[in-house]
Structure formats: C-alpha cells, structure tokens
Image (tube, rainbow, N blue to C red):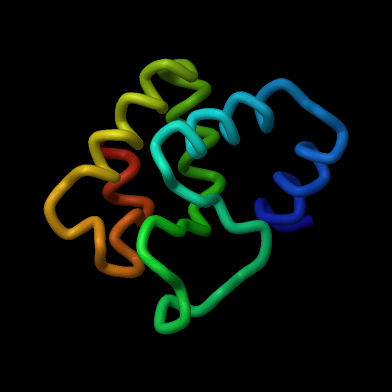
Amino acid sequence: MTQLGLLKAARAAGVSWAVSEDKACTAAGIRALLYPIPISKQKPLMTMNIYTLNIVQERHGEKALRAGLYSLAKAQGSGIPGFINSRAIKNC
C-alpha cells in the first residue's frame, strides 16, 4: 500500500495520526493529496509528501507540524505548485 492509500484508509477509519495530520494541513490551508497528481497539474498548497508529514508529526507533534505548515503556506513562493515538497516540510 502506498503512503497516499494508507492516509486515505486511515482517514476513513478515523485513526488518530491521520486525523491530527489532516487537522494540521487544514489549519495551514494545505491539501494533502490522497492520489498522485503530476506537479504540472497541481495547484498551490497541495502536497503528496504524506510520509514526510508523518515523520515530522511523529518526531515533533501535531502542534509543531501545524506551525511549520502554516509558515510554509505563508512563505514566499508558496503560490508555486510543488513548493510544499519533502525538503520544505522537513526544514519547516
């Protein structure tokens, strides 16, 4: 199962990590995609980097993830599709 599929299933089941990850993304205005979309067709503030979101949340908690995603959403360049990538999430 892919990370995208795992997130979709976990959201449907109401698993706590998926719910808190979803809340953090929603609060920041970021949409965690549940299916792959090429960057050329993505809109700003979309990400497919579910695994990286999971890592940051596990290491630092939901509040830190939320704050980091919020700062990314407000950063210069966030209007470019693909800006919310793995490197940006890890470094937020």
